[in-house]
Length: 244
Image 1 (cartoon, rainbow, N blue to C red):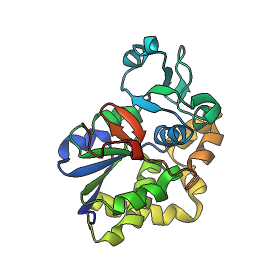
Image 2 (image 1 turned 90 degrees about the horizontal axis):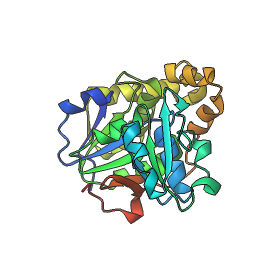
Image 3 (image 1 turned 180 degrees about the vertical axis):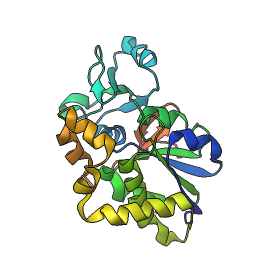
């Protein structure tokens, strides 16, 4: 088996222009949603339910779930926590179901309806994810969550890192995949320095959460691959490999 093609969607706003038939969509939100999703499931969270809106997240309160909400980099008042990976440690999330809404990442997941499968990518799980993707016989679409439908440097650099690992499969690359890989090759020798100029990186530094940036740029901290099963993210080994 081998990947048929590798495409990069530089913004969720562009998703309507992509045919998702026979396609695995990899949703990327490096700072910080996809990183925290990977870390939370690795630390024993039972499941993560990504939702687009605050009101929908609040509607799960009666179920006894943990509610997490972030807007513009800040925890939303009235919720248990936001999307900092340091909120997803084992002592906080083990055995829990988390309902999460974020500015960009959870909305991007919702927009991938129609894909054969939707998985989550981050530097924290890049090797495990890449190894699994290499074994698939599908098209691949790397979906950059961006910032409010605009281009984001960190998500695109990660997409390029994935392309660099996967292109040896002989898959056909689109122009955005070539561009993303070029950015990664420029950045790879010092990712923190390169991504310090990213607008969201600067936004997080102004919010005094620079330690989140350093954490999210670590490679291979976990081996978990979150995958959508219905409307819920679970660990890949527990999931049906197609989205229902």
